[in-house]
Length: 172
Image (cartoon, one colour):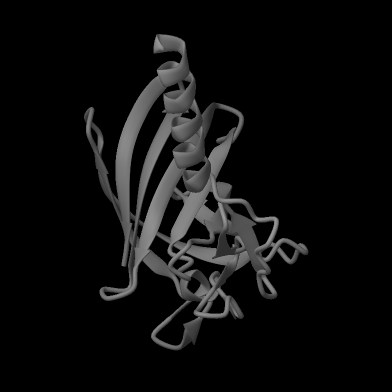
C-alpha cells in the first residue's frame, strides 16, 4: 500500500512540475523575438511592444541629440572614484545591433557593451562582459537605463594596475 501511495504521489508531482516547465514547441514569436520558457522576449538590441525598435538608440542619443556626450560621475566603494569624465556611446557598425562601444571610459579606455532584451519589451539593460581594460587590467559591468530620468547607471568591477575597484558610474 505504501508503494502504491508513493507511486501515485510521484506521478502527481511530475504532472504538477510539468506544468511549470513551459515549452516553446507551440509558441510562435514575432520578428526580433525569441522564445524562452513559452514566453516571447525581445532579442538583444530590440525593444517595444512588438520588438521593432532599436534599444541602442537611447544610449546613442539624448533629448534628440545624436552622438550625445554623457557626463559620468564615478563613485567607488573601496576608495578612489569621485571623479567626473565625459564619454559617448557609438555603434560598432557590426551586424549585432545590440553591440555598442563606450569611448573614453575613465578618460582613456574603450570598452564594448551589449544592450539586452527583456520580457517587458524594454531594452534598458546594458552589459559589459569581462574584457581587457587597456593592457593593464580587466573590467566587467552591468547597468540600466532609467527611462524617466534619462540616466544610465552601471556597476563596474575592474582591476587596474593591480588595484581592484567596485564602482558605480552614473551617466547623465
